[in-house]
Image 1: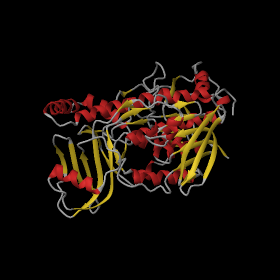
Image 2: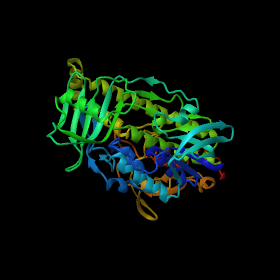
Image 3: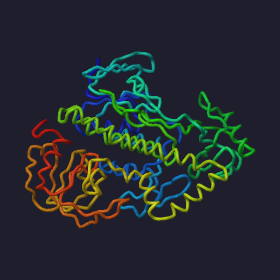
Image 4: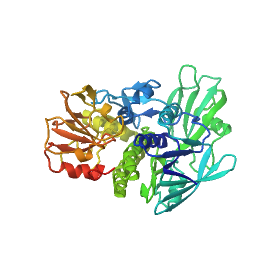
Length: 492
């Protein structure tokens, strides 16, 4: 029985990001992946939002993704284009990059960090006890093995075996609408663009100058039991357009629905959930992959501190407390977008009203901040507007030269940033875990939704880039905050 500190089920974007976070903290982690390679069929997961690009920048790897995709200065909400080019972030854009293209980049980073990925193997059984979890794994050719871990994280998708094995409920809404999606080749001249009819919205569009054609069709029924066939696609095209446009070949066909469900708890003892295993929802707004990656960045440093004995097990409860509301909000706004997309006169009137509202600056900022993930606010109590929010990536001058806030987070360690002169609190007992940096910054402290805020004298930034404390370095509450988030003074 192979023993590890953490086993991750699933090497999609969420599982890979979590593996990287744990590896940076020196945790013995292994990933179990059903696929034999990182190759992925189809054009699912088509973009990285601003906050996801920021967390990749916090680890020093954002440029790898930017070099592979195309940036666009806007996000979408129910068919309305929302400009974010005036948002105060270095990544005030959406990065168009298919999941099949971004996964190998993320996997490359994880492999550089030395994380083993057990490919062609599937988790088929889970048993939990007081000291860890047993993970039964089968190979494609049928041989079985068992892994032992202190903690198991299910990043194994909406049908998560890990979630079911842990007995975690998955309440929510059954599908009301189904869409067929495909990448095809056609001999005829397709009708590019959007079409609305009594079924809903349909779309055909080119994937590059010489690439395949992307097809999205609203289906008549939702009670499907398997993947669609070429004949299903042909019939659906004829039903909507009156022709199949000389459909010659389908490189990939799949379907998705507007089912919306969320795990009742993101944790059951030694088992945790992240990504689609924790929340599934309609794809409107392109938020699913991004929410999963951000789940991983929130969980990674906390799980690492518990595994290494730095923090007590109860720190993991803050993962559910912080990320469950974020997931619930994504479910809420995607369900609203589904309703706004329905095709009748009443819903058209609703869309027109929303379009008028979103043309105004404050509603645009509110909704675009939500879709992009830049407005996420963890409830860490009252205080400075920064508390619980993402730390702006300020330009800093330090004794070691100029740098950026995000550059200080590349190793996934917390940073205590002093901006108002020397302080009176001795953080030496935490110095092996928390990096102290004295700096000056002439930049404006501005948040995407709140606007400009007063610069604090000092700020404690967690490894995930969110602010845990602000104040003066003489604040007697600072040691308690350091202990709460980063362990007792002097511990390992």
